[in-house]
Amino acid sequence: MGEEEGMSSDCQKPAKTSPKLTLLPLIALIFYEVSGGPFGVEDSVKSGGGPLLSLLGFLIFPLFWSIPEALVTAELATSFPENGGYVLWISSAFGPFWGFQEGFWKWFSGVMDNALYPVLFLDYLKHSFPIFNRLIARVPTLLGITASLTYLNYRGLHIVGFSAVSLAAFSLLPFAVMGILSIPRIQPAKWVAVDFRKVDWRGYFNSMFWNLNYWDKASTLAGEVENPSKTFPKALFGAVVLVVGSYLIPLLAGTGAVNTPASDWSDGYFAEVGFLIGGAWLRWWIQAAAAMSNMGLFEAEMSSDAFQLLGMSEMGMLPTIFAQRSKYGTPTISILCSATGVVFLSWMTFQEILEFLNFLYSIGMILEFAAFIRLRIKKPDLHRPYRVPLQTFGATMLCVPPTLLLVLVMCLASAKTLLVSGTVILVGLLLYPLVIHAKDKKWVRFEAQEGLPSDDNQVGHFVESKLPQEDTDDATVTLLSESASSKTQQDPSSVVVEEVLKLE
Image (spheres, rainbow, N blue to C red):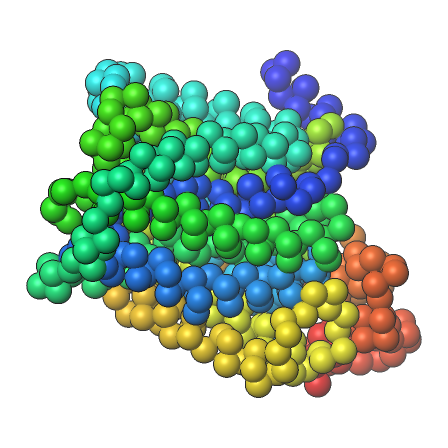
């Protein structure tokens, strides 16, 4: 009872002004949203039938997947520099119904993804401490890890950001050392080895896709970034270089210096590679780095998931309870909700989660690319502090290759993935009218918007009121600038089209 009263008082007190994220912590958070280091890329060597396809994948995939997604994220995140990220983009382009669906898909996939990391943390440690193979030690440790990392999120986003910087440095340093030690032993001819008879294309594409996605995730906490118009593009560029380098350097070192068959390359194999190159001390260092990396992945994912719920609440899509902040400036209930989802989803296997994540993520990304193009066509004068240096046709062509990849990943999904993902999509479709009904019946409290004839208008008001005053232009000001009398005379559906979106 005492803890509940304390939490309640935290939520009722005015939140302190939380320090904003600067460039380096934001790079670290994006790095952990996308990668966290080379842990998990080992499967690309096995599924690719040798080093060649793995190395080519991490050289080529970023060109037509990571870079386009990062560019689109930079433009839209700076155009809508508020918490909620892609939910705002989709809502502005297609309306709040699709914005809500996007938010539900991305939040659910994020929680599923986060359920992996406490499990992987113990999977690396159990090689040195076999007791973690036993449920009597594993279950309470999993709960303890989840609780402690959740508390760190609660204490403040700036703490999470600087923790991510430290964890990233610790996680990547042993691979830099391994790369240096491997130089005398590298045989470049090993890099071109491939056996196409052993290529598992489904596993290969899923591995590549999973290790190079989630560039848009950090946009959900854009409102917590210092000077997002300048910081976001720089952070995304820095993170792209860091992620690609963190994959290629260990792969070049390991596959070029070690004589092992491709079939040996599975999750956690870099620890063995470290032993073969540097000895037991390097293996221990890599195991410790892997464990710490999973902590960074957990922190970054939970921060984005929680601030996404906060942004949706501020837009009127979720009850106000999700927007309540603690004295540290963090969304307490949103964090607890995400942590609860992690606990309930941690029973799934790695490969199952991987496919589920990729399928839901693919649907959401196709919608984001569509919103990017639609806003370019219908809102050409929207204030864009950072603009992808392409005209509308070029911007459309930029989205074609990654969209084709998304479709390919979805086509490779198993029947079980289709069933689970279809269920999640159906739940989202049914949840939206339920939320609207709860708002109409005043069962729970939502953000109040004066003079709004319909729920759909809240998105436009939110975007207009939150944009920096010095950045507004004529197109931004007219996002929802009609007189109150004209609103009341029009049908609510026409108000949505003409005033909120200004797309017709």
